[in-house]
Length: 456
Image (cartoon, rainbow, N blue to C red):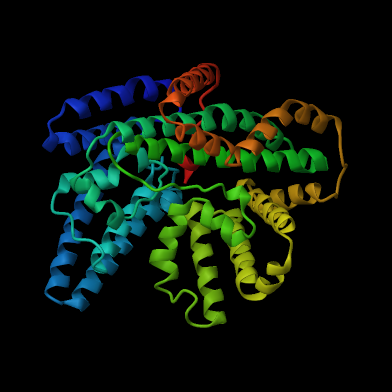
C-alpha cells in the first residue's frame, strides 16, 4: 500500500487513527502493531509469517545477547551477534540478489526488507554495545520493526533512538497538527511535483540514449534528480508526519540537499538516516578517519561499495558506489584545501554537477546506457532537436517549481507566519485545505505511481 493513494488517505489511515484513539492506553501499541501488519500484508500477505519469524528470532536473540553481556561472556556474545547478523543478511541477500539464481525464478520481494533488516541489525548492535536495553515486551519490539510509517522506505530509525518512545509516546494536539501538516506537504511533493516530473523522465528514458540531443539528455537527468528528491523526500515527510500523529518523533531524513557546497555535505543532507546507519555501524567500527589517510580512504570505499550493493547488485549500482567513494576520498584527502579556496557559488555548481552525473548511473539500466547518456549530455551529439524542444516546452514550469521548492523559502515563510500568533491559523487552514484538494485531484487523475525507493 502506498501513502500516495486514496485507499490509504481515506481508508486505512482514518480507520487506524480511530482504532488507536479508542483503544485503552495499554493496548495502543498492540493496535499499531496490528495495523502495521495489515499494511505489510496488503502488499504481499504470503510473507507475513516470514516477517513474524524474523521479529521473533531477533527478539529472543536480543534477550540472549543482553544476558551474555550481563554475565560478561564476551566471546559467546560476539558469536551470537555474528551468527544473527549473518542470518539477517542472508535473508536480505536471498530476496534482493539470490532468489532467481537459487530458486530458478524471480520471487516478489517482501516490502521494506532492506529497511526492516537494517532496523533489526541496529537493535542487535545497540544491545551488544550497551547503548540500549534488550526489548522486554515483544509487542513493543514488533512495533519498532514493523511500524507502518517507516516500514517500507524508512527513515531508518536506530533502536537506541526509539526504545524509550516505544514505552511512552503521549498524544498531543501539537504533535497531531504538526504531523498532519508535514504529511500533507510530503503528499504534495509526491503527487504534484514528483509524479509530474516522472511523466517527462519516463518518456525521455524510454527513448534510446543515443537518439537524445544534449538538451534532451540534460532534461532527462534533471527531471530524475528532482523527481527522486521529491518522491523520496516526500515519502520521508509523510512517514515522519504520520509518526508524529501517533505521538512518535522521527528525525528528518532530508535537509535541502541540493543546497550543498560539497559532495560530503550533500550526503549529510540526503537520506540522513541511511548515512547515519553506515557511519555508526560500519565506518566508525572500521576505524573511521582515525587511522591515517590510507585507512580512511579504504574505509570510505568499503562504506560506499556497501551502499551501492544495498541499493542493488547491478553493475550501475556498483559504479555509483565506487563513483561516490572516489569523490569523497578526493574531497577529504586530496582536494580539501583547494576546495576551501573555491568561491561558494562555484562549489555549489560543481557539487550539483557531480550529483546529477551520479544519478545517471543510479537510474540507467546498464553502464553502456549510462555512459551513452553522459556522452550526449556533454556534447557527443546534437545540442538541440525537435524532441528536446517539445519536452522542454512542457516541462520547464514544473522544473522551475521543483527548483524553487528545493530551497527553504516555504519553510521560512511558514515559520514567520507562526511567529505572528493565532492570526495565521485561518490562512494556514485555507492553504492546507487547498493543498489537500490538489492532492486528491492528482491522485484521482494520475495513474498509480509507486514510490521509487519501494524497489530497494
